[in-house]
Image (cartoon, rainbow, N blue to C red; front, side, top):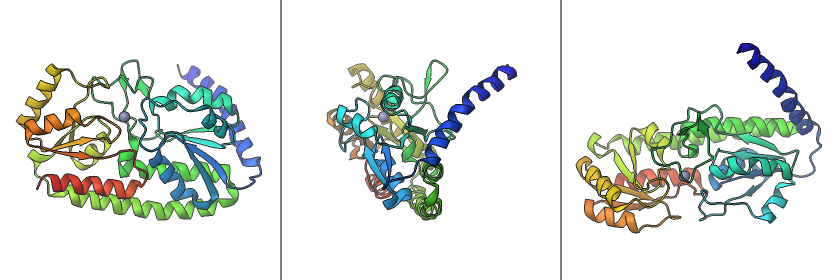
Length: 301
Ligand SMILES: [Zn+2]
């Protein structure tokens, strides 16, 4: 087994080294071209790359990242990119080979690597199918960016790959990382303060699509999903969700602007709960997380 592993390392290594050699020796004409899937990752890249990079976002604001397919024009834009910053969303996993085929020099960066990933809630394997998987059954939660502690690691990872691709500006990337980490710490502190006073029996929230698992993990909240297998729940399942939420005294329901509010509204009526429209894909990451925490707190008043 160990022999096999060693062999694998030797077989893999030349590829990685070649990639980096190519990156490091290419003289950069103009800003580094960085492609990302979703807006929050663009925010992270810009915080660290500043004017030194130019970003392309595949999923436009307001679109559903789960059902997304890159357009031919985007594939063409990607052919000029140096790197792609992936978080392991379904389409990113599914499109990785095509992105690489369209641009053989593209460095595909997996920002989810090195994070403690959590499995997605049960029954949610439909539209993340093909996403990060462990073994054959368990699918890991790809919404890694909703947690400041995850973002701290992702930011360091981004700074590292930018510096490798553009060593002439390594100092600038390191300095920007330092500033960004201070801001991440400030967001983290604000979230801790916002969630601190919430009593134990008010820490459960319902969410149509379970995109907030890492936020819940970090701040002692419990996320319960309404959707089932990526679809509207059946009347029977909906009844069970409402009964369970009633028993737990749920007062807050999260719904994404990209998704239907109808089911959430009817559940809210049954529970006397508030529906908060919160967007995990919002571009201004820091302001968005603060707004989510503030709205959650206010809804419990
Ligand atoms: Zn999702």
